[in-house]
Structure formats: structure tokens, C-alpha cells
Image (cartoon, rainbow, N blue to C red):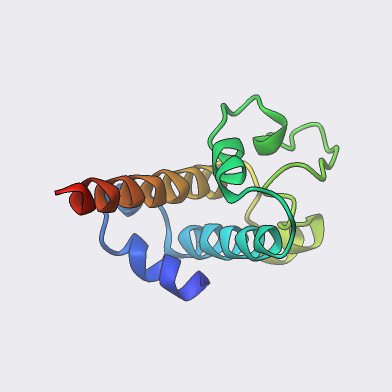
Length: 117
């Protein structure tokens, strides 16, 4: 799934402002979250809605306080990974993740509109 998401990001100009590593990190995190959610009883639509809430929301916490939120969609990017990669959860990874979710929602909307005609 992460590979599909990376290929998808090549089609949209909004991803030009991000480094390849930031896009790859966002794709990996989203793939892990979707895979985890698909194995549970939670509603996928609710997951997508929650990932797109404002940046002050618990699902997209800024991690500046150093407190980990198990509800945050970026929580898969642990402190160990931050140390190894030098890329923090906040900033560009967070923005790339949000752009990716919005792009997927837009793509789904366009396909629904096309199927109506």
C-alpha cells in the first residue's frame, strides 16, 4: 500500500514542496494506519475524517510537548525513528501526511462523481 501511495504522490503537484523522504515517511505512516484500521472494527470513514481535523486536534498533535498520544495518527513515527532519520513528526511529514489524505479523498470524490454519469 505504501508503494501505491508513493506512486500516487507523483501525479499531483502539491507534493513538489516536500522532499522524497518526507513523502515516503507520510506514505508509510498512512499505510500502517490504514492497515491497522482495516483489521479493527472501526469505520474507515471515521478514520479519514479524524486524520483531517485541525492541527490542534489530538489526532494530529504537534508533539512539541514531548507527550506521546496513542490517538495521534503520526504516533507510528517514534522517537527512535526520529533519532535515526533526523526527521521529526511535526513539520513537513505532518503536512505531507495531510496532503496525502486530502488527495485520496479528492480522488475518491472524483471517481464517485464520474460513476454517477
